[in-house]
Image 1 (tube, helix red, strand yellow):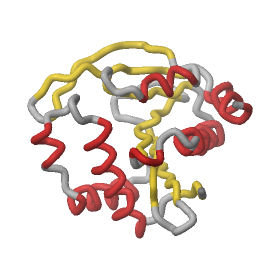
Image 2: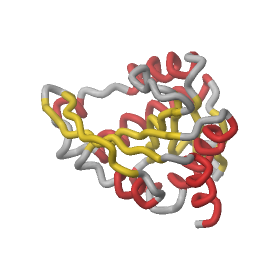
Image 3: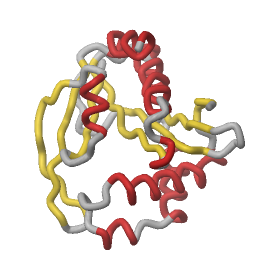
Image 4: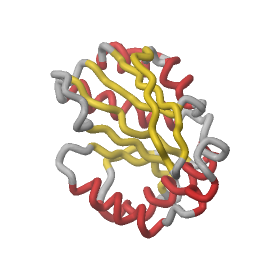
Length: 176
């Protein structure tokens, strides 16, 4: 498994992971009509725009056949007004690739980026019913607030977590 920074030509592969992982991860959480309406083509255009944005850092997990099986993103959300703080904005993998340490490898790359760029506090938002929150908690994320968002016409609880020290998380990722 190779973890590398995403390139523009990776947009289609990232879009496929994004759509497929949303459909598996959020089934029963987000309305089926919304998930069924997701489009590879629309997501590919979204990812081309995301990669062009100067404040986004995007990495992919590529298997030995050269196929993208996961991705992770970092940046600073507009609502994040904290100094020396950034956001882990996503980690997504195909369902059959979960449980093999790929998410941890992607997260480690993001935390290397955070520490190299002087970020201390890191935030992540995760839907309350998404089991991924336990992954973040395992690596020391602390719940700071719960908010409600609307996706596909449904109000959903979202949790906002914080890591107070990117360096401490990177250390934990490196030894575990």
